[in-house]
Length: 409
Image (cartoon, rainbow, N blue to C red):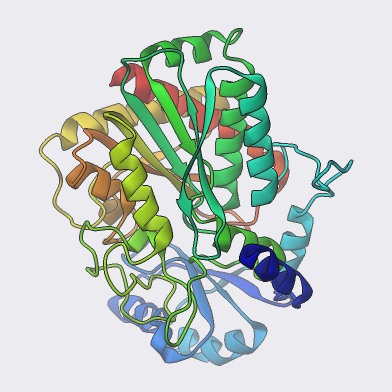
């Protein structure tokens, strides 16, 4: 009842419009330019600047979303240090509107259950339940509840006992729709093609497979009804709403790359596992049996990232993990022609403490643990906002990587 009332209130509220919001790209080439960008990225400035790719290194692009009003405020600041600004979009709302597709024919829930579109969480749950009703090798697992009392679901595929598990999690950052959609397409393939697809038959002969298409359902639903660019969960704090779930795990928690400021997009929470979604995920992973591999799926940039994210140090088996990641990247290129870059988060992006895949490697001691950033790559327009036409090729890329990893474990 609580979740229904929350959903009703959200639906009646006016959704945030991003009309005339500018998506900007800059490339800092001097220390003064980089320092300026880092100062602007501090949420404590009070400026509404949403860094999609944060400033961390010289000669690497960063991208950020600003209102027209904020752009006019920072334009002279950027010009003052000689930063050349490329405007990728003068109105990101147009891309958001184009991203939405009609639901089509109604079902008993009022939705077309089509994995080739960006589905709401309610649709995802209905579709996964249907898979369990018609396939014997599929089990739906409720592993907890979110802050807004939505059931947290995982779907398990198994053809017999005695196998280790590959675990794939997506949707921890609410606005990263392509990760959830790509995982749903792979779930569709595991469910419907298990007795005819030779790849699926082989993968199920090797391991059990567990998929969580959306580990942050409250935030994800909020992106559909209220704010497309929402990132965190929806549990309130003293000043602001939400915690970055991927900064809330006990692996470098509260360290570099996270924030103690409640209004920050990278707020790490009041303590490790302070959020019901992260606590439930840890409990479920511990109960899921011996893990051979774990994958945390994000977007965007087209990266495959072995551990660690919370420190520049690397695990002792880093060379082995990285070598396998390069094989997965080559498999993606062979599948679609896309190029994925391999490296740890500090090498490619920034240090980020409190991530789930670091916890799995460091504390749960699963040997093969990776984070992936799906399409689009750097230096393309609209960032998180993708046409549904990207769902199928993105799922092909993710599947090619997972298949390569599974054959290499």
